[in-house]
Image (cartoon, rainbow, N blue to C red; front, top):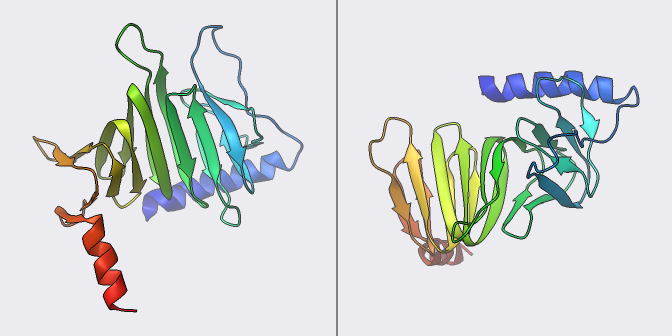
Length: 203
């Protein structure tokens, strides 16, 4: 809760500065620097360049580089960002993320990205040979060639492929197979079909 409060305090300051007319979040980098691009935006979202408290409104086509902090508004819908055609991430309303790294692949090794989910929820789709690591408050999850959902409490739902979850203090990761959900708080794994059956039984 303290982390989320700090995030909102920083973002609140940035929002005030944004009202002064600061707009656009693309920041010049090296010509060959790989970055995420905003593909779809339903509602409002904003970005903080690395080391800055100046909030900048996001729009479709903006580029997001390593070190930048992104937040979606609570009254919006979704923000979609993509790393070329290899990694697609969708963030729910009231989410906050930090771009850690984006790397291009070569040969048989695909593109890779590292992102930190500070608050909220995300859905991730990763193409063949690509890889994505997403940190959350209690650990990190890695997925290659698959599709999954993650929230800031460490609930991992895998719809395609498999995901590897390493919690703080663990020496070995937990592998979550396709069609299963992993709860970081309890360490339990359940099938998604089982959860649907539970839901149906209460209707």
